[in-house]
Length: 201
Length: 81
Image (cartoon, rainbow over all chains, first blue to last red; front, side):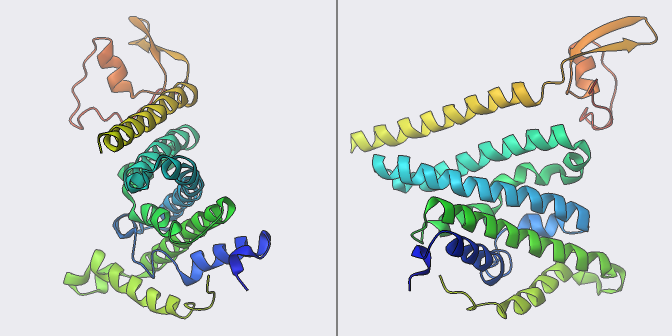
């Protein structure tokens, strides 16, 4: 039976879980790597950036779905989706930046340059483009965005936790920093292969 | 063909303009700390500036230039009330 048309709740959670675990955007597609390498030194900054990415991905997935279905397709300019999605994400990130600056100035400074760089986080744009490959409804598109964001959040938090524990002084010199991080991500990606194929949508 | 170009350019311009307008309104609403008074050297001079901007740039706007090696990012102090 077609999963996407079996009620409302069931596809929502199936898409959410599959986007978070079986199709983890960071660990199976290796998207969003630049900010992951840059911010994952500590758990608390990873948490902050991860939460911001979850929020931005979930909301922009819904907004971009509406823009695509009700503006781009009727006007016959679906080929503009890439640039329109980027504009929408950029505006939304500016908005989130203002809110974070207002709510927590400490988080604002600890995220630093990576907050505006969420705009060009390829995990988010990737989510928008993968979303169009499937015949999702609005709610399902939102679930997919939320799941992708949560997957990214989960991965960067685990990586941050491992990097806090890894004694960087004891790794060979050429592997310090990004080198050992990429190895950690590779091993984690192998672990996440165990989930693959569990849910098929 | 000309029509398609017209539609796409017009749509992008409208989209960008709309989002920019939303952001300007949001900035007015969210980052509005009200105006703040700065007392310089214990009553020598009083300034009234908009809240939320870095202290260094707020002072520079009022003609008070303080040398700063960091390039006046003003990360140290920020006016909130």
